[in-house]
Image (cartoon, rainbow, N blue to C red; front, top):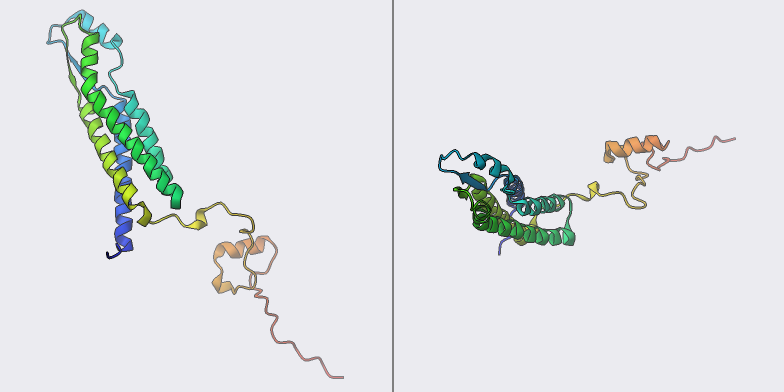
Length: 211
């Protein structure tokens, strides 16, 4: 099988991460909104207004909680590599499945639960647009996480230059020509009191004066 070109891998990586972040963000916002609509049929029942504020939460908190976990995993995917990165993509898939599962459960159950709480009033319950968006976001999150699990091995990784320096990493090259050193190396050499132009080659020795 032909290897996928690097530009195409980077494109898939960007699209997948953006899709996963967008889905997780939408799910987090949607879960914090009302998923159940209330309709009193225009009766203007005075109890309706008070019941609306005391009948319980109309949102879907588990969706928001698991969506925040999902967003955190995408953040970790961006800054890790190797085995830890692959492990986090699996964790992200679990979080995405939880988001979708809680969203579908809330979409199915919340209207009935609220209707039971308001059974003494003539109020009909339904689903808001946020409920539909929450389910959609959960499904997109699962799709993006599946793509991540399958393709993470071929994704570009953050360079090691962004890692915390290990012991000995702070030593600057000695004897390297100036044109081959970058500006950071030059400034560090000056800070340490070394001459960055000193390549370690003292040049040919001058003959001593005779007599």
